[in-house]
Length: 488
Image 1 (cartoon, rainbow, N blue to C red):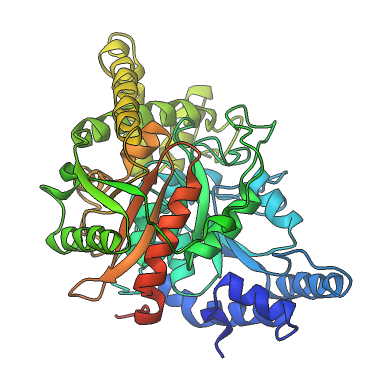
Image 2: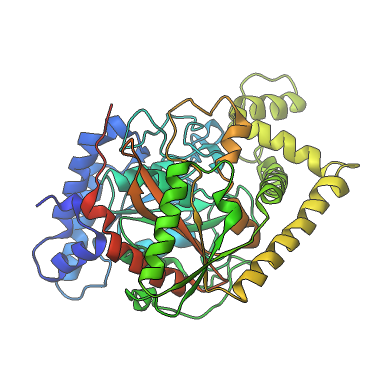
């Protein structure tokens, strides 16, 4: 038995039956990291082996008396979530030496469950990118084909789960950064409703868009992890008290009576033919299973992308203003005066993609352009929300592609920012609206690369997404049919 092949709910069963210990599980994952990390490069930092095993042994001792559900399960954490006493770098030179003095709320919740962090996972610098090629430290590679990207910005999290380096991981999603890499790596990824999961301790990219969520091997694991991290947090003013829910109760393989909308605009120009074919197959599958699937109109694609990049860059420009060489982050050694410290620290500390977005964000917020760009983008945001509201008056869920293509080759789009931004066309609208969305792996294309589909739900209706996703998963059985090959 390969322990690292098991889902978390399978690991829980074996822990309950005394077939495995946390120490055995943790050791198996650490061995797997030793074997495959050199190829995938999913981590920024890996927890010291002895420290991780000591923690696992400690949890095993505690479990002799009483065991909580997720106690002793390892996890990986994206490197933009603060972890006390551990480096939190956001994959940037600017924060290369930053050791957080406190835990993010989600990290605190994970620790309270008795889970064991195996390390901090690689990402695009400050979560700005769609391929994990913009990390200051190193690129991450897709375990299905090591010549391709894993997606981004949570590419390290997605690649680590797909390669069985961690049983599951936390990521953040600003414009698709959980769902898109999940699709490219053949795993499940959920972006919850904005406000459902606390952002306290998440290093901000765009505060009105960012949301933490789970990346997992299957839908059941996503429900288990959301149960832990969801909930109101008084330390986050945007956190919403929506009551305590058990999302595992929604794992019912039945979609009879559900109405699913299929927006024709998301199957048009720019969507790969094999991806389009997969979406139509899924639509037919849902019909066979008793759901009502209907073509609908959601003509917001072009407006969404422009709106997203104006709002996201404006908020990034504001949020990253604190990294000035004085208060936070890297300080240049090359200066003669205060102005030099500011200028040189930011010039040397930020990468090219981060600088590009700061410049764009500063421009749209500047005097004379604020009304023409930022204010207008916020008005369009309201229109996009209203368009979704109309659809959810009629449908339970919306079905779209997660990514317009499968994983692309390393270096293929990194020199063309506009082409990279277009890769987010299917995911950014729901961040603008604040809706929940999930990627479910469905099949592989002719080159053996995963294709995922996206289910979008109404505000705080994650249960409907889980039900439909679980139904599809049980009928498709993606994990039983396909596995990453680590092709070189």
